[in-house]
Image (cartoon, rainbow, N blue to C red; front, top):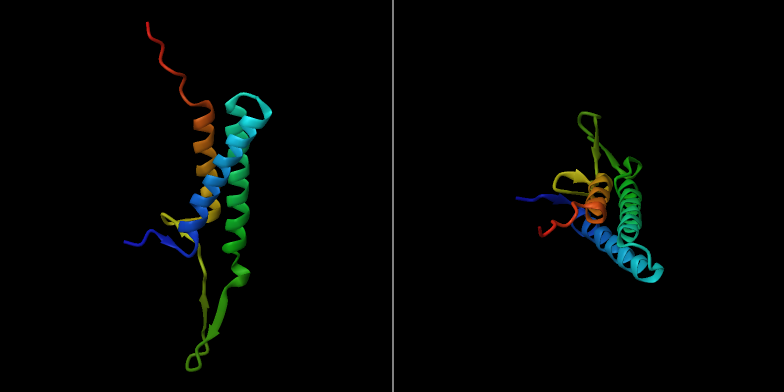
Length: 111
């Protein structure tokens, strides 16, 4: 079963990794709470994923072919998705995951 199309299988995980690297670097260099690092990393990863997805799935790049016999146009779309979601919509999921990493449930107390 194919659950991706185009470059979705490459770019969505890559954007998540970029966000994680940014989170670690921001957390290590600024000395602030790790929540700030994961929030900034999530914003960067989600922004890159949205930007890249809208560029990849731009409908102006579709090819239009004309059938000689019927004269009808056929549009060939180049779509990039992962798990049947276009790449740009993964930005919301990535950002939500980073927010859960930053502000997830507090650790359980022993007592």
